[in-house]
Length: 236
Image (cartoon, rainbow, N blue to C red; front, side):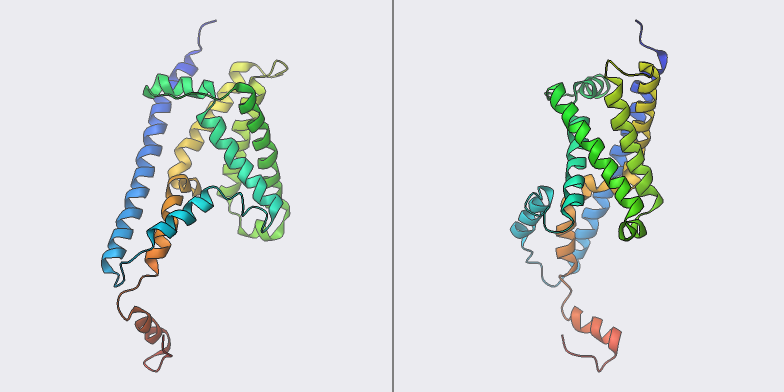
């Protein structure tokens, strides 16, 4: 059966265009973040930063297994599984790697299909819980923005359509479902540099940026107090 024209177009020039947007957008964010940290370090009076401690803390948050049970354990584990499912399904599904190789000429070993399916199901369940949590828990709903719901729905659309498309019991014509799957994926890719998903590259810089922000110029703390409370401000 010949490949539909829309697949050739979407997985070719349109995908390349979306990848250019996300790569340039993320590179811009990283550049601005690093430039800001360098400028802050140059202005700081104390440049002795605890780089090893920052590195350890960053790794601790990248792999937060020992933190998940501390607060809102169900939500924390669901969020962790959802992120893990995204990483596994995007970067280790053979179909995705075939497209990546055809588009950019690079690839790496894929995980077994059954294992990717298991992570996909886990991500669907976890993502559904996260969406319901945002809808029905007042404290979370008050902090959620429209884009938070859009991103969750896009991701669930991608997971569910991709999983169902590969089943023998799929009730929807395969190519139509894959069109829906692919379009949702392209929209998500294009949104990455402009939404909170950009933390996928900015997160390792967060701890260092926070540490730099607290290394003020000489007498910086005193000057802040004077600004807030006047010349009779309390000592720092």
